[in-house]
Amino acid sequence: DQQVKQNSPSLSVQEGRISILNCDYTNSMFDYFLWYKKYPAEGPTFLISISSIKDKNEDGRFTVFLNKSAKHLSLHIVPSQPGDSAVYFCAANGGGYQKVTFGTGTKLQVIP
Amino acid sequence: DTGVSQDPRHKITKRGQNVTFRCDPISEHNRLYWYRQTLGQGPEFLTYFQNEAQLEKSRLLSDRFSAERPKGSFSTLEIQRTEQGDSAMYLCASSLGQGINEKLFFGSGTQLSVL
Image (cartoon, rainbow over all chains, first blue to last red; front, side):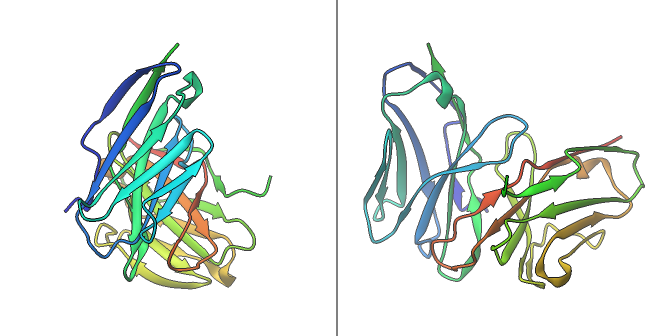
C-alpha cells in the first residue's frame, strides 16, 4: 500500500521557469512532510519540510505548500536552475509512525 | 566531514554469499535507519534503532537480514545467503530522534549487486 504517491515520474522545465512537483498521501495520521533531492549514486539530501500546522514554508527558491483537506502537497522551485536537475522524493511521518515513508520520486530535468 | 558514512560504496557478490555493510551515523544522532532503494522506487524502510535498541523491523526484512548497533554508535547490516532480488542500494540515515518533525540525514549508500 503506497501511502505517499508521486504520480509524475518525470518533469521537464526550462531554466528560469517554475518547477512544480506534486505529492499525495493517504494516511491522515501523517503530520510532518519532507522533500528530499537525490543525485545519481548519492543518498537523498534533505531539502525542505513542513509541519501540518502550516500550509506554506519557504526557503530561498523552494516553497512547499500543504493542503491537508486534499491530502496534497507540492514543491515549487522558482527560478529553476540546471543544477536542480535530480530526483525529488516526497516523504511523510507522524502519528506514531516513527519511520519516514517515501514516495516513488519525480525526476526533474531543467533545460538550459 | 561529519555526515553519515557508509562502507563499502559498492559490493558485487555471488548468489548464496553473505555480505555485511557498515554505517557510521552523525555522532550526536541517537536514531539510525536502514532503507533499501531499487530502480524507479523511493527508499523503503527496513529497520531502525534508538541508540542500541532495534525498535522496528519492516515485514520486507526476511530472516536472512540482520542489523546491529552495538553501543549505539555504528551499525552493521548483514544479508545471509544473498539472492538476486537483494540487489539494490542500501541506505543508512541518522537523526536526532525528536519523534515528530523527524529529519533524516542519509549516507551515500552501498550499491549491492548479486550475480
